[in-house]
Image (tube, rainbow, N blue to C red):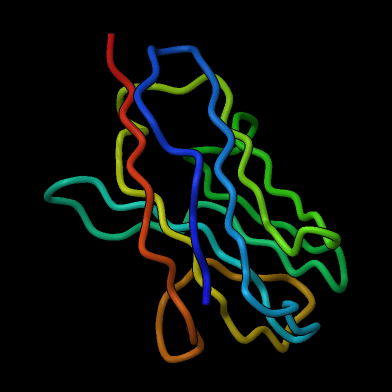
Length: 125
C-alpha cells in the first residue's frame, strides 16, 4: 500500500516536498514512479526511481527542477519540487512498478501493481 503526503498550495517559484510511504519494503525488482494528472489532461509520468540500483529518470517537463530520492529507514520515496510553476498544478500520485531493466521507466500499464490515493499540488499567485 502506498500513501502520498506533502501536497498543498504554493506560489510560483516556491518549493514542496512530496513523500510516498510504502507499507512494506520496496522490492529490489520494483521502481517507484511519480505521476501527475491535471484537470482535463492525461496522467503523466514525471519521475521514477529504482532504488536497488540507484536508477533515476525524469520527464523533460520537470528535469532540473524536481529530484526523486529514497529513505530506506522510513521506506519512503520523496519528490522534491523546486521552482514550481502554475502548470505543475495537478494531483500527484505514486505507483509501484515492476522493473526488470536497470533504467526505470515512467509509463503506466500492467507492470503497475499499486497506486497511492494522490495528493493535490496547486501553484497559484
